[in-house]
Length: 284
Image 1 (cartoon, rainbow, N blue to C red):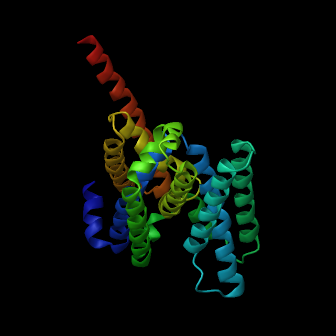
Image 2 (cartoon, rainbow, N blue to C red):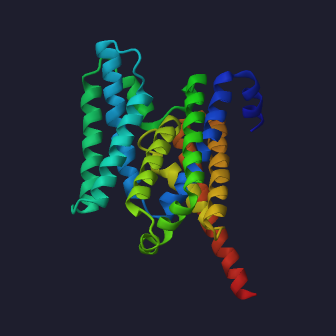
Image 3 (cartoon, rainbow, N blue to C red):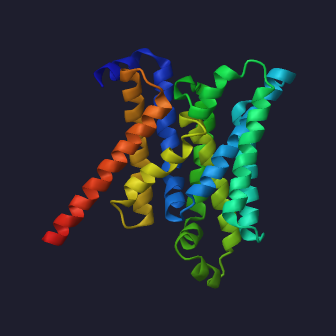
């Protein structure tokens, strides 16, 4: 860890990566809590994998047609929002089975991305960074974009905290109290989509779900209220991204995969620790 600390002072790219990881942790912890509580992991997975379609389209337009004003994160954002709206509309209005609809959206998004990238000259080298992330390539501009999206996610969560809390635990009761469940469910999906795009810059498309759910799952082991769980999830995400970044630097391993493996190990420790605490309470 001493080597990583000294390297932070020497290398700007490491400082950028650390700041990006901490910023992403805020939205990750907040929205990951809703994903875990509402058991939306499969929905979030569908949105995450649709992102590849947007990334592929953006890269294709930039390299094949010279659209230099189009950035992969723009394509990822558009694809994530479209996927969220499609899944939300299907879940609220259509009679199609949710798992079938999400599976179709998931597959279509991935296939679209692969086709666009296949038509893009010299895409192969970059594909790994899109799939598995490369936080070490985050620029100052990327950090500003992450900060703005972070603020947007937190602003909406704070503004609609009561409604989101109501639909998270008892949709029928919320509906009886006059809450527009379909509307706030759609808002939640849009927020998840924004968070997914943020996480793609850190761990890539494939590993998004792990970082979105593991910190919240760890927090859920040690908290009984949603607000408390959210705060612990943000803290856990910050520790996991920072620790994974330090480990990947010291071990010279892929950063995104290292962060997720570190998070997985931390979750196992949390499970064992929570069970031990529970047994001691029962014994006393």
